[in-house]
Length: 559
Image 1 (cartoon, one colour):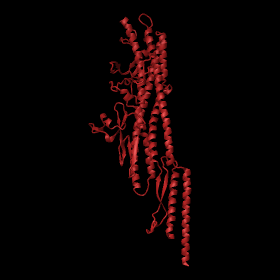
Image 2 (tube, helix red, strand yellow):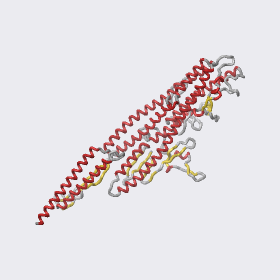
Image 3 (tube, one colour):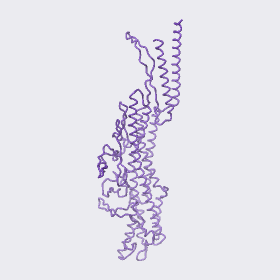
Image 4 (cartoon, one colour):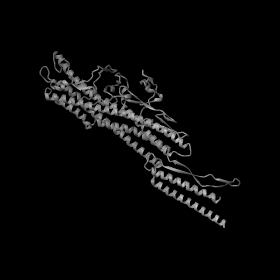
């Protein structure tokens, strides 16, 4: 090779080393950038000059040095997939664990001064004191006062559960909006990456942004994705195309007119109708065919149905405020529907607690009212004109009353009829008795105290006749019922906590393995910088040597 041609080798070395130094500096400057992926240079030999194709062994060729072919990202596809799947699963259980923790706080004795367990215990103690001296005005006043505290604190607990449920509903909208934004950003980045990589450059920083968005999106919902030959990433969410090429399929929200609760659905699958003003709307009967999430599927890691915070929120929130009658398979329309509890209530953390808690309040209230009614009727059988435990209209006193009495009744398959409306959100204390507890005199027509009614009241709190839900077989009394309710939440929280701990270890392990691949090591980059600096200096010295040789030849020929 001529000396002039040899300069190509030195120049190529300078250019390649310079580009490698720039890449190393870029890595160092993004050491703490979230989502940044370490970049490496890829070197290749420049095209050879063929001098002769004749020869028994090989062609005679001359090299022109090295070229800087590309800057590539260092990523592991399988680690990315595993990380996104497991981080989505971790987000799913994190929501469930947090929801149970919040419910445990609401049911706890110190939460916002509710102290419900104390109010239940105080009511039981008031019953015990009343049974010792039923005609004592002090005991009567204590009984009514404790009943008022009981229903007030019960209402506060149930309202807090409903408020938390409503707040989760707001989160549904926030996360759906976030999914749509991520989808739009991915589509925009797809076009930008394709435009840049249509030439000779590589849009690595844009790819970093896209990968970071995929990481975030995977925590909200179960996604799958692939990259086509044009650099476009196609994303599926719950098995349906979210981003396909340059198209984005938007997720909308159906708002239930009675509860205000949101249900995510795919716009592209929706069958809209139009109202009298020409505005389109989604009829409820069309919702089933375009839902984003199938919440009826069994939650299982084997089926990958336990991935994504949004699904976990929807499951925990449920679709309405639950009441006691739903534990007996009375649906939201007040009609018996076999399996209603298992299909619609048990799967929701909040709805299950609401129904079980309401059942406790419903049972206490109706039991006390029934005992007062039975006592009044028993006395009237002996003395038809008796006014014992009756108001001025001759009706038996009811310590607890319904705010709204719509006359609703529920009929069970065995023919049992349940009066509706005795739910914690629709209860109040009898203000006539609240103002004058002495109306509950508990003294019979013959002047004796009504010990029979007292024994029934005591038995009502001690009777082992109540279960938390249809799937629990062990009967408990009122006090143990609430303790078991709290224990159920605590035990479930412990289970989810163990899952969270295990899942966190898994995610951290995968993230550490991925970080070893994509992360920037300052020590490694400084080592590379020294190496490329020496390569640059070596190429520079090589050019100087060739330059001196040329100068020597030229000066020698000039003499």
